[in-house]
Image (tube, chains in turn green, red):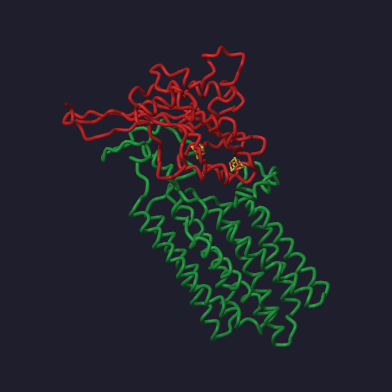
Length: 315
Length: 212
Ligand code: SF4
Ligand code: SF4
């Protein structure tokens, strides 16, 4: 598939915003168990960042649509379409983040903020599930059609959110920095394992294709070769479903994302756990986010759409 | 069982002339499914929307090769994966005759349906910013103003070899159903479970060795 930048930005931005929200809520609960209130500065700054990330994500996603002004129609098919469900979950979650923020800003009781936040948690996970299922539900796209897709979306989003929370807390709520960094490390390691799992799975899928040119055109002869796809120029089919990059480039992107999403941030965060350096944490988040852009690019490019069987030879 | 209109394509007689491709474009670009815009049609990298493409495959090993011309359009699947994924309901399958259509006024151009179709049967209209696909000439086949024998898809009308048979594949007595039955008509990518309504009649390939 051809990676669409609108969707790459949407899923990574929203993922970080969702993860940050989870981290903030967890921070509030954690401080409470210590008999303390979480620093309001930290809470508000964090929520504004989360809110802005989500809004940026929402904006990016509209660039994917041919008719963004008709976008409201997309809420109608929630019974069957995960995309429709996502279109419902996203604004609801953004609204909840806003209310949670407003509750903190206006110094509402902990009971109020915590219960609002709880609704937010539910919506946050609902959004993760919807976003991931958009891909995981397409059973012909075997690289995506796996529970690993769901696990990866949740882990990668939460991971980047906790890394961000760790770097924000360093200056405003240092009592939480160690905890956030520790959880971010654990999440990064877990996400690394599950992402490697999906890479291995996809490799084995490539080695055992389910459909072939024989099943595509229904000729059983072992040797079938396309001579013409019916046109000399390009078409939607040749643009939308091929990434157009070399094997070498794809491998490079894989190395880049493995290094930038997992290895480098892990090293930096572990270092910061001992040295307490905030700069390392900020660096870890930035590197991890850029790495996630590469990861998401790869996520799309790796899918070999069955329609490609019909578009092998220009002519 | 309800009606399911479809095409049956006989690969024994298709000569790969692309008459169906051009007549489809001619009818539909000016019909209710139109326009089907072209981009850069006379330039170095022409591109455009088509509902029907004729491809060519070579089967066998030289010198025992056969050329198979293979027309491909939306197969109006009985279990169309492109429909439930559509967030707006713009993509739908008609109850009354099983034709899969896109409502261009509702389509938001998210392209999700094209990802879900394993056949690459949908083509995005970059000008109208909506998804397009074969309509089985829904604006022809019921037109009372056309003489009865012309109430067929434009591609069927145009085919000089009569490789395209149009009819109700749920009606066991239709010519389409009979052709499928008598000639072992098959579906494309059957492993996908989409149950395409369109069928293909297999080539009787005779390579030198196998000839009796
Ligand atoms: S061929 Fe593709 S577009 Fe047509 S009905 Fe089947 S899945 Fe949908
Ligand atoms: S491109 Fe149009 S028809 Fe296809 S899924 Fe999106 S809204 Fe539905």
